[in-house]
Length: 81
Length: 154
Image 1 (spheres, each protein chain N blue to C red):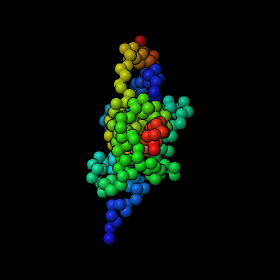
Image 2 (tube, rainbow over the protein chains, first blue to last red):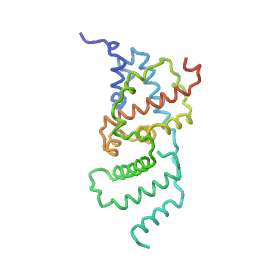
Image 3 (cartoon, chains in turn green, brown):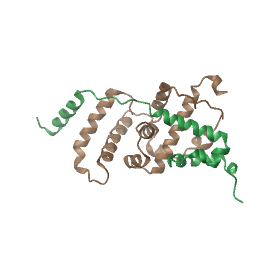
Image 4 (cartoon, rainbow over the protein chains, first blue to last red):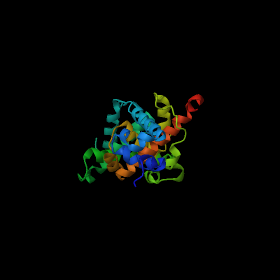
């Protein structure tokens, strides 16, 4: 007789989580998630963190003279003027 | 990744210098953008090592450690992170991550690279990339929970 979803321990389920999340599968349909509030909460929180990350660190435009400095450094290294 | 604009500019310059020095070694085994990104990441990693930061190298970060086992991640069931996360608190938590975790987290969750791209850039397996990202998120979750108001943790 195969184990019921609840018989899969949280530790076992969570050890599979990196692969499950990384697979992009819809985990709301996972049997363990449907029966385990602890793991459901954990998953929800990790998803919130991942979503919040998208708004972090807005792109900073490089200053106008950065490329000029890079060109100067490369020319200096190659000995060209 | 380094949390400092002036330093980021210096590293950008260094990355282009490295590109100039090494362009002849590019053999087309991977996309040029992947090769360039990897080169730039190596510049960042070298800088972090030079500064002696708590790097937790990619290798170390991928090794499972007893205190980071899966059982640790389910403590109190009723958490409150499912509401809006304070952006500044999250940025601070990301900045406090060991560099190896921070790198994967930023590449995947912030910049949107896929695990196969990250694995190629960092010369690690896709499984390691997934595992390290998961550990980074767990660490962030722990850090954010510590800053929750006391009543929210009950």
